[in-house]
Amino acid sequence: MENLVHTLEVLSNAFGPSGSEMEVRQLVRERTEAHAQQAYVDALGNLLLTKRGTKRDLHVMVSAHMDEVGLMVVGYTQGNLRVATIGGIDPSILPGLHVLVGRKKHPGVIGVQAIHRTSHKSREQSPDIEDLAVDIGAQSEEEARKLAPLGTPIIFATRFHAVERMCSGKAFDNRAGCTVLTELLQGDPFPCDVTGAFTVQEEVGLRGAGVAAYAISPDLAIVLEGTVADDLPKKESDVSPTTELGKGPAITVKDRSYVTYPPLLRHVIRTAQEMHIPYQIKQPGVSGTESGAIHRVGVGIPSITISVPCRYIHSPVSLLKLDDLENTIRLIQAVLSTLPSDILKIK
Ligand SMILES: [Zn+2]
Image 1: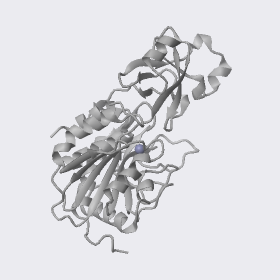
Image 2 (image 1 turned 120 degrees about the vertical axis):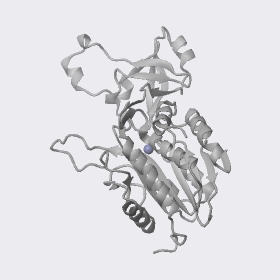
Image 3 (image 1 turned 180 degrees about the vertical axis):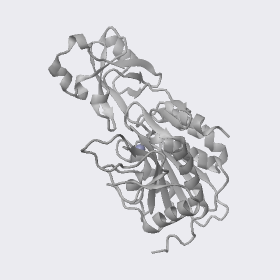
Image 4 (image 1 turned 60 degrees about the horizontal axis):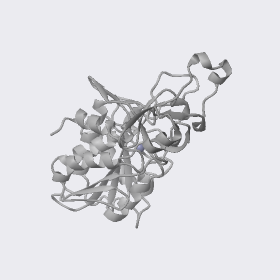
């Protein structure tokens, strides 16, 4: 079996902003298809792989979104590209970054004025996205249009690094979740049927997950994420961290989009305790997850989100601990292996 770090590296380096998940889909497909009895790509681009269980008493959807935040070409200033964001990105982190433009990965730089050319006042202001431009070395608008037509997606050019038990790279939200799901599908069958859903367009509004849940129509859903860890040196204004690195998988009780089905929450926590797997309860934040889209599909699908804590998500580079990735895999494996058949009847 492929080394876990290598899977994360390959997926982290891949090109996959929302709506352009093809490369990520291909990479996860070639690693998981042989381990599933059924695999298909739906009309939106979700990859669904069903692994039949030994008992087949329940059918569980386990989802991980493949897309990452990025930029899109929306205009030109002479040879430079005007851009808009795909998903949530703070424009103030962008100036001076390396980017890759389009699926052919043409290199570009987000232009920044040399300090010799800027005033004190201008340096105090954060730029709006409209103020920024991507320089791809084109000499004219015509040349820029040819290299990067309107609508071309752009990603951060960050490369993955692993040093001992710490990994850094782009798009750990949610290539960490994709790595966990890949590993789960590659393992032995579970008692229940499991359909792994590598979904599209989460970062622009949880769009793939609802469609996937409708097609799968599972009894329960587990959503895998790479989530915010803000366990950083404290400033006075800081509130408590959402999650912390090294403290194990983060379990969501409630976020902006859903409340976890209590029997499923109890089962996950009990399993972690019995298996001596460290875990943490995610502090409520402002964001939602795919559980928000999935739990309202059809007649209702009890859902839970379990995440690998990652620092600096939605930026050019995130940081995670391998221990958290491994413990998330162990926890989901144990949860799926011990799901009580009557979990839907427990009140
Ligand atoms: Zn995410």
